[in-house]
Length: 81
Image (tube, rainbow, N blue to C red; front, side, top):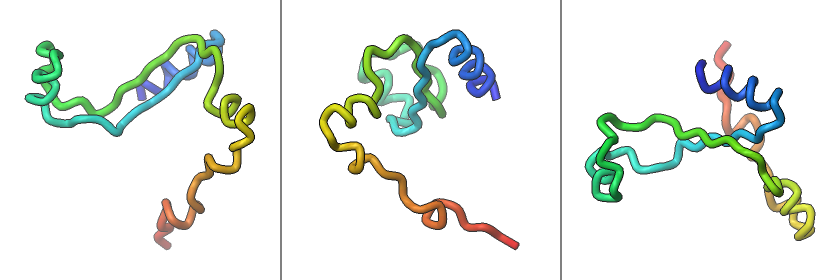
């Protein structure tokens, strides 16, 4: 909920926002990488700032926009009736 509210505010202010949930979950591995201050397993990473170029703009420039596709909704969501 906090990330959603923060994103809304940052987008209103013209900043770009990105989320990441694909990262190391084991706290010991974070310590091995030099992040000794990590005490619990992270569940979400969020970054914000001013992008010089978005992923979509980069793909358009390379004429590869068709390569960045999402799977069909039916592959992601299973509706229960």
